[in-house]
Length: 441
View 1 (cartoon, helix red, strand yellow):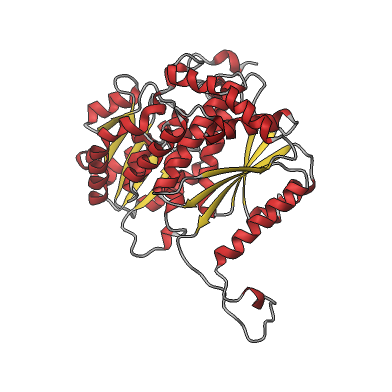
View 2 (cartoon, rainbow, N blue to C red):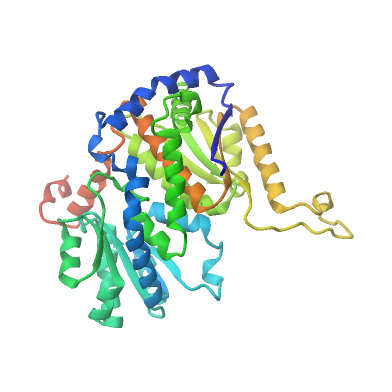
């Protein structure tokens, strides 16, 4: 029997009691019921709840398409922004080689675009793609979101000129709405293969749809194991009304009680650089779900031990307005042993013979103890290893916890009205038709 990810709250009890956490978690069973009965706010966007079961019928086609793109190209550019790329990138980077572009024997390379409007970024990318045999996966519900739409227009033009329109059409896959929008129209006109973004799943909850699974499959990872991991955690959490054994309820309750104690910022901490983009995915999930109506916990992140030499001072001794959630990976996938030196000039012989992971784990434990003594509540999420299965567990764990946490805060965790504000000003400044009033302010 496989282990599961676990939640450890022992470093929060100086700030909120275990009894308080379990009590609020038990009260939050009603929010779990609202999700399952689809009676709460945002109930039109709950397709992700049952996704681990429902997506299985699409896995064959996703894998077939991934195999085709890998066979006709050596690089895939994934175009998307926010939930349309963060989940895929989080999984791919967590499970890939740390230096993929320096691997001489790597069969397929993954590149991301459409997540910014930087001219230098696109120009540099075009220089690389001039020398690559590439495909495109473009992800957009509407096809008109500014950043990915610009990137797709530029890259589609580049690929068509480089390879010809028929070849380009064979190498472009669109993941979009089933029936409406600019991208589905373009795909039908040009004969692109398409996958559907379900109407009842928002972007930040979409990693287990083709939005995330196709890029992950193209990268060579096991999407079936990812889905199995998510399914296992759905079984542990979704219908579990015993709050003391439901990790998602405990996490949602603990973080909200810590908020009530005056800690308004949550820092996602990892001690594995490969989890950097998992933190980015987590920040979007919670920031976009909770940050509204003047409420919510501000999500931030750090990469330790690197950031212990920059932000560590503030976390230890700065304003006491933050808490940490540490993703702790129990077992490293590779092995490096520290050698012994005869002169010991660097004074490291006391570590000789140790695996680097042992040193890293002790750095993690020491950091948790220091920050906790310094007034920082710490939630620890332990993960047996970095694998598709356990990332699937983490994804479902956080998605369900986020939905419950939003309901505890009394906000709709499935809309994002504030995202549109900057777009209106940008469109006005660019003289887009219909946005002139904002430009004259």
